[in-house]
Each structure stands twice: as C-alpha cells, then as structure tokens.
Image 1 (cartoon, rainbow, N blue to C red):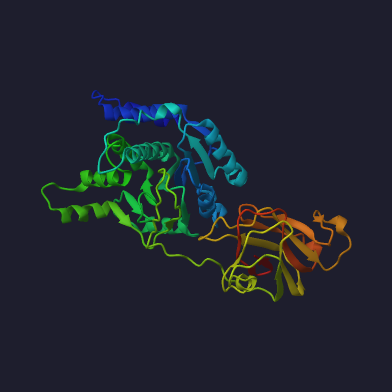
Image 2: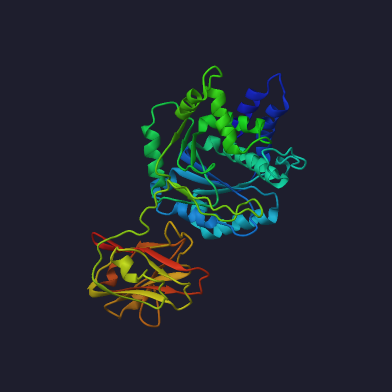
Length: 444
C-alpha cells in the first residue's frame, strides 16, 4: 500500500496545514504501523470489500453470528471476488488477539483463502477523547462513544479503499439475506446517475455501499468534524455541501441529495443485536423494510423414515425440513444425539450437503457433528478411506461453520441410511434448514 500512502500524502500536503487536514495525513501515516493480524493473501483488485468494525461488548458479542450470516450460501466465485475486513477497534492486545484466534478457529478456510481479514489500529491512532464538548443532549459517555466510532469508520474505510471497486459498510450485529451480494450487484448495475451511496438498510450506517474512489473525500470530511456529530449525520452534511444551493429551498435540496443517496428496497440487512456497544444501552432496532426470506429451502426428496433423539421444539419437526414445509428445530444437542434418514429404498448417493442454522437464528448450528452412512453391503470396509463406527456406519464428513458437504466414494454402493451424529454437548439449540435432492445426488 506504499504507493497509496505516498500519493495522498503528496496530494494533501499543501501550504495550508490546518489541524483538520492534518488529521487525514496523520491517519495515512498511522496506517504504516497498522496491526494486520491476519492479512488477506495478495489478490487482484476485487469487486466488493466489506468492512465490519467490532469492539468489546459488556454483555454479548454477535460477531461470529454476523460472519456466519454473511458467508452463508456464498458461491466460490463470490468468495474469490470479495473480502470481509474485520476491524477490531481496540488497543488491548490480549483482547484483539483473542478475537483473531476465535475467527481463525471458526473460519479457518475463509481466513486462509483471504475471504476474511482481521486488522486492528496501533495504540497511537486514537487521540485523547476526554473532555469532549457535549452536544445534542448526549451524555459524556455517548459523545466519547460516537466520536471514537467516527474514527473507527474512517480508519476502516481508508484501509479498504485500494482493495476493491466498491466498499460496503456493515456492523458486527446484523444478519444478511442469503442472496445479498447478487442483489447488490444487480442494483448497482441498474444505476445510471452519479450516485455516492446506495443504501441496503434504512438503519444508521448499516448496508451503505460506496464507490472506493469516493472514500478519500468521504473520510477527509468525516475527520474534519468527527468530534461534532454522529457518522450518518456527517454523511448527510457532505451531500448538502456537494449539491445543495443555499439560494434554493429545502425541498430542492432534498431532491438533489436523493440523486446521490439511493435507497434499495427491500432491505438486505437486519439489525439483530440487543446490547449496544455503548455500555448500558439497549437498542431493539429493526428495519421494517427487511424482507424476511424463507428460512428453509424446499426440495424433492426420496421416501425415507425420519428419526431423531433430539427434543423437538413445538411444530418444527424433522418432516418439515425433509418435505420442504419448514425447518427442523431442537433444543441443545447432547453427545450421542442423532438425526437419521433411513431410505425406504436403498440409494446410490454421490454427494451430500447439510445446512444448519437459518437467517433468523444463524447461531443455531450443529457443532462437532459427523455425517455417517450405512451401506447395504457390510463387508470389505478396509477398501474405503472412511472410519467405521461400532454399529457399522462409515464417517464420511463433518459440519464446519454450520455446513457439511462432500462427495461419497461410489464404490461404497447403495446406501440404506444417512445419520448426523453429535459428538459433544452443544451450548446452543440446533436448526436443520435444508434437505434436497438434485439430479443424481442428495443434498441436505
């Protein structure tokens, strides 16, 4: 990124060294000492960079659920053309490293491939945030919180700027529609006018898409007034500066700003956090324009006997998900619990795919759960590269981040049953949201 830093240092080092312009230069200089905990492998310039600032919360962290929701259902092509930057906006090294390790443990493939990148700022980045001027009736704590938040957004935006064509601002306590990337691409392609932000949520700063080429200007404006107002207000003021004529009325101004700020409906992102990153604040914010997609997927499946040792919650039965009428939901699994699909007629299964969790409850996934098959012919186990259980099943795979998928050696022959076996107690409930058969293979 050296060329990027040098370019803007030269551009902004003019004769007038005002304090606020210097903030921008200091930010660029500060990035040279950036603590990139898990930098993304070098990729060619990609289409979409997503930024998620996260801080330590007193009550509950939603980061892992947010990441599962964002990664849920992404194709390999989409993963190769995007990066999610997690900005741990803390200077406590122990906490920052703990978050990094949690992400790496939960999403090892995504970290290694560069889909997920984790960064944190150097301690020298933040100025003294004490004795800030109180405004708009906000408490001292809230003014300090929103001021730091402005600095966090600015850092993340400028770091992301050279990596892709578009930058999507997100938060660490959201859920996303499964097709959000394709929907964003389609909506952006439809726009002909010179927009500055496309909004995919009506809440705060969630789901705001910017052109990367505009980010330096936006960040410089934020840094000029980061102590004065919340980030969404500052963005609105930037639009006013760009297009509003003081000699025209307010209606004309709003009309002109609407050309720069275009709202997409329905919303693609929903706020799910209850406990704010601001200590003691409860925020039950919901986007009314968020169109809750189907929480399960229906497919044509072969006849089978369905059994489970799990305690089913209300009407969310195993038959629901298998027949495509709903999803399966059960209380926290214990070691030894199982879900079994015994086919009424033996089948040759080439591939499998199990999906747990759904958009409303992305954290209710199957942990430490193996996928096992019972073949018709019990003999000749040694020729297969699968571990056999005491009761004759072959272990063919396991869940990772709520999903289990793979191919099955066709030499196994016909299969009588597929079983999901829980190997250790789970701290959360479990949802099975998809069961399908496509052409010559079965997908769950």
